[in-house]
Image 1 (tube, rainbow, N blue to C red):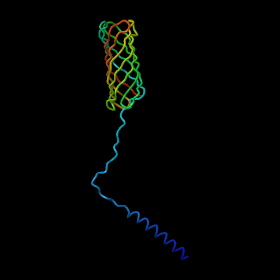
Image 2 (image 1 turned 120 degrees about the vertical axis):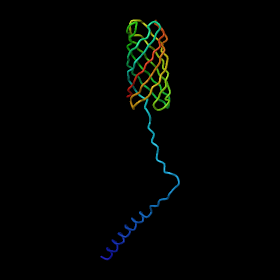
Image 3 (image 1 turned 90 degrees about the vertical axis):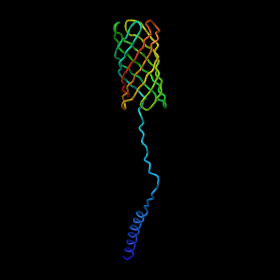
Image 4 (image 1 turned 180 degrees about the horizontal axis):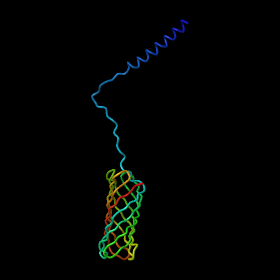
Length: 181
């Protein structure tokens, strides 16, 4: 039994001694440099993917005068570093002094992501009057889009329509909001 007591006492003493040795090993050394916390940066707005939205339009032509209307749009964007490329389809109904009509357009967009939340882009494409006058236009212009939440952006865009078939040159200004999926 004395061997058992000796072994138990030795084990207990070793365990207690090792525990106190670990606690005594904690040494702090003051330094002159402050401890830097890791910096967390938000990833910014994700411009990649599909979007859909609504907008208000004002369109001015030499023979049609100034027309106002509302429209819907849908598109897709792809962001490569700070470059943005995309395509968009839009339709708006407009009314003015010479009557009502519907105008559709297909646009390609290419631009720069100026900050995480702001895009400046150029746009070009094709527009067609879906109403009574048979008109089609080549569209060229640009715009700016600003992210206001994680999935909503607002935009302002200007397009000039160069007549391809009938009609006259048009200036179009739109302001709208998009929901990004």
